[in-house]
Length: 108
Length: 119
Image 1 (cartoon, each protein chain N blue to C red):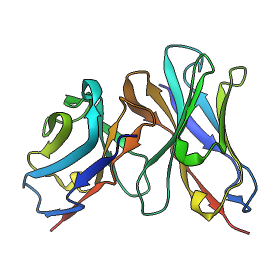
Image 2 (image 1 turned 45 degrees about the vertical axis):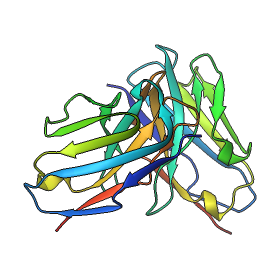
Image 3 (image 1 turned 90 degrees about the vertical axis):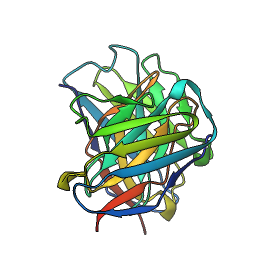
Image 4 (image 1 turned 60 degrees about the vertical axis):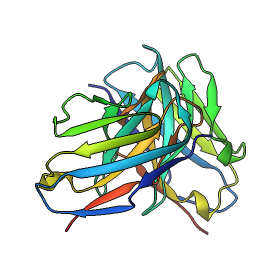
C-alpha cells in the first residue's frame, strides 16, 4: 500500500497569498497517477488535478500542480475566498487507492 | 449528466451488516470502462477508499476492511451496492459512491450518506 503524507497539516494564509501544499508518497507513484481534491464542509470532494499536473475541467488556472515519483506539490497562486478548504492528494496507480490525510487551508 | 445517489439506513447496530445502494442516473452503469467505487469519511477525518467493482463485475477491496466488504452491480436497476459485515463504531462515517476511471481518479461523486453504527 502506498502511504501518502501531506504537509503542512494546516496552512494559515490571507486572500491573495500563495499556497504551497506537499504530498509525499512512501513508494513511487507510477505514471504520476496522483490527484488533488478540494473539499468544503458538508460537500463531497471536487477533483482539481489528475495525472500529477493536469487541471480537471472548469478548474481555474490559479491551481497548478507538479511532481513525480514520491514528491508532489499543489500550488494556488492567489488565494480567493472560495479556496479556503481542505485539500487531499490521492494516488491511483496502485490498489488500494489511498489518500493523504489532508491539508486545511484556513483564513489567517 | 451522470449523477450518483446513495441510499440506505442511517443507523446500523454493531455486529450487523451495513447495506448501501448507489443509483446511477443520466447514463448506463454498463457503458464505458469505469470502476464503480465506495469511499468513506469519518466525521472530521480523512477519506478512505473502500473498494470498487468494474463493469465486468470484477471487484477489488481495501485490505483494511479485513474481508468484510462486498460490492455488487445490478445492471437492471442501474445500481451498485455495498455490504459491510460485522460493523463496529469505527465504521461510522459518511459513505460516498463514486465513478472512477481505470487509470483516472474519481470525477463523479454522490452527495454522500451518513451511517452511524450504534446500539
